[in-house]
Length: 115
Image (cartoon, rainbow, N blue to C red; front, side):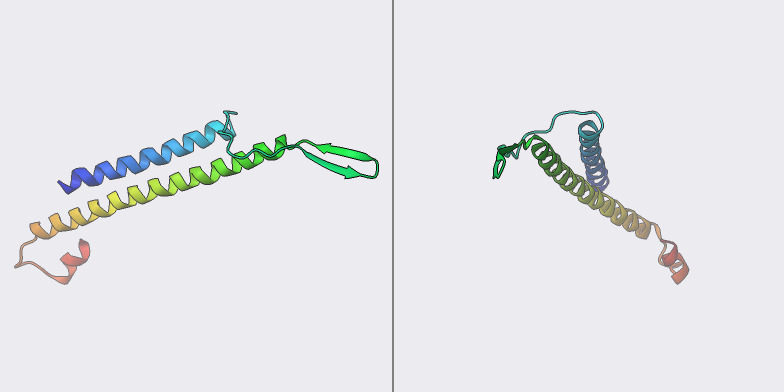
């Protein structure tokens, strides 16, 4: 029963990681659009020569890509934790099965170290 759950957790974690990496690849290499979370208005500065307008489109793009990268890194870490949990469950199940197969008469330090 635990083997099925551990393999399911492992595969789920790997799929989450692959989804996040694929999304990051599409955005940073493929040129896909990022959800606009941050929006800065154009900046107007008064100088001696008169008012100067500074467009903030580049800052908007940079801020949205940065927020997207932080969110995807969070998703990758969650997938890593889920996969790690599956691996730990699988390791515990393997040790449990190995201990059940041991004969109590042949139990030595060397056989325990091999586990």
